[in-house]
Length: 384
Image (tube, rainbow, N blue to C red; front, side, top):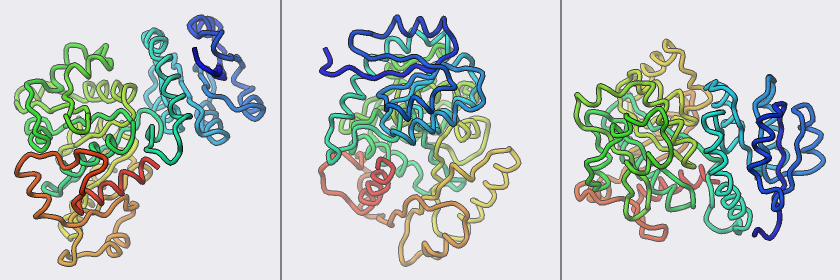
């Protein structure tokens, strides 16, 4: 039994769904209140809540309501039960601060089965000392995509080390997905040996859940990071399309705190789908003129495809050194995106890890090379 009951607020105009939710919640161990969508502001101002469950109604301001709840009490755990699969709305709900969403009626039983775990995780988060390691990242289901239009920028090494660092520096559930189909690469850097890849999820892609994903993903032995390997067979890779990528990422969003994607340098349907699903796009840029030209070309392509980069893309400056053509100040003057991190050139020490296929991060407390220190600083800024 829990020492104190949770305060749960259900916002709904749908009586039948509300009844099902109420029947699934232990009323003896939770204080539950049901209100209409017009009463959200008054009720939140009157009393903060541990959980707010929004059951989708025909209102145009549910995203603003989610934002308002978070602005009043940011720890509140928000769950959105959607009555249709409007991807634009669901993406905006998650960006507004919701931790979870479930699409009804297909995922109602999934919500019921997961709710006790959400309560345990919330309790752990609230009981953990603020000075300790971060228990969760910035809300459940963050998708961070690493991209560069130019090959050889260090994107794969940065994305894999970032994923390891997020996992080691927090208690978040993290999965790293290699979308470099046809070529792969993550398995070599992390010394993972497996004959399974994300292509093995194709038979269950329409009902994909956390159990399916974990049956195929590989657990990196040091950080316990989950990794989905890319198929290295070009013929098999051609069967992966945008719908597959979209379903995969949405399932990962619901099952993990952070989903880190390593994208290929070329732009195709799969790359565009992943970028559109991502909350953050980290463009890895080397400080030289050719790299800036490629970035400009990517901006032009994105504009033609209708991809909005202004609110989601940030720059990671890699291989910074005195010998490079441009300094950080120069890049700031030349690009219109914020610089999320600056990573020093650390060729000799970093190459030793890569040549051995040795994971760059293995433990929270370990001696770090300059590259790892810079990635850790970056990851910490995201977690905080």
